[in-house]
Amino acid sequence: MTEFSLKRDFKYIQWGPTLLVNFVRSVSASLVWIVIVIFMDSGTEPLTMLLLPVFYFVILLPLGLVSIYLDELGVPFVWFIILMALITILPGDPLTFIIHKIAPKIVPTENYRFLNFILILFVLEPTAPSIGKQWWK
Image 1 (tube, rainbow, N blue to C red):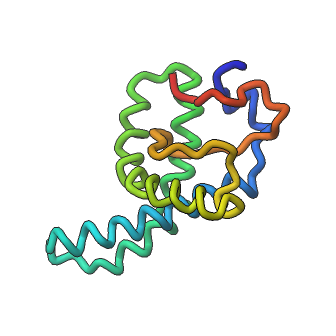
Image 2 (image 1 turned 30 degrees about the vertical axis):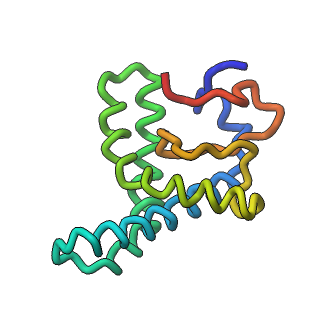
């Protein structure tokens, strides 16, 4: 097993399951953020958090793909961009973990962890050389 490389492993990405996992994760994060906003009583309308899945797929997903590519090129401090974007999606991981345990077909991964410090989770074919490794260094 080798470390995930977007350039090398791109052909092994199963895009349907990848998008499904990340969609469930973004919806879960949206629900958690709604609860957080309600308890913070910040004056923000909690239902605006329902736009998080759209924000994730329109802005964060492309940003994550570009950031991964730039990281592989050796651009310094790209991890900081990923970290800032990850803060929005990470709160949904525990709920997604529970969904994975109850209905594994909704979250089609073999081993979904309670917290995934990754902005984009890729579902790879079983023949991919980097199965079991994460893309970060």
